[in-house]
Length: 390
Image (tube, rainbow, N blue to C red; front, side, top):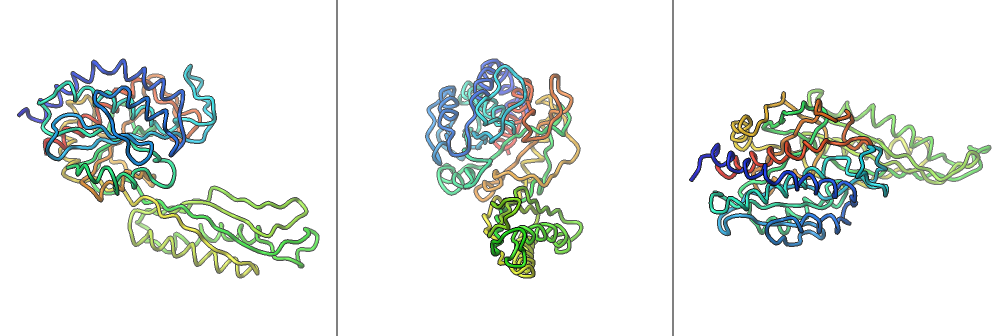
């Protein structure tokens, strides 16, 4: 049986032969993105390029096993879905239908196809099967990862689950791969404040839910930090405010939508509690009623220390270097997979790459250069090898 370094070397050599086709696939995927739970064409395009037949999973998802038919495999995840954005990158294969791959999912998918094909060419040299997981709905609820973790992927019984994700704030050629918590949990909230409609000239005849909701938003940002340890990450975001009135109409109802993020379970609970208290209390102070509808999302993502340690030893062999420690309040439903097996998610740097225009994730001008396909595939490969040989 080859050592991890030897296995990675052979896998990377095979991977190199697959990259031109992977880049072409990336172009096709980028040009025709699809939203969460509607990724039928995307899944079909990916499955058509795999070296083995893929099975359907969690609706539009696909799962394909490469290598030994027995033993616990290593699962490698890529995401299928795009975002509801109008692309402004200007590349020849830009998407044009108000949906965009603005989070690198096109790159992740193309890289994983290349890795699966490379692994297939090694045959019996693989110490553990590689299960390529093309996950639906990473960007929206219900979570595709949660559905897979409770269904088809649980049946696979992987020994580990790994993934790589591009990141524009990390240096090109680097991989951020740290043990412990690296991403926050995320819960979606909808706040509804109900008052009493009236003419704008006679506010005393009604109860203004818009004014009440405005005070709710300010109070949330003031109170949430008071409930958390100052050394613990926690974020409250309110990104949508809606009220269907007019310049001379105070409406009956106002709605806000946002998200709660935390690293620790106790802080996650505290944020949920403070939102409920503030909404009810502030709304009541304005003569209105307030309620919160909470959609529980992914837990915090905690990378397995043993997997991370083994993978970091292979960085140089994969032509990557360790990035400075990287943790963020971003969230990824990849975290649901930790209920099945040890997990590790690495972040592949883009900053400074030729042709890369610095833009944040989820920006309509974000475009990872084609060279990112190879960088992500190498990161996926070293994570697979680390898990297979640990």
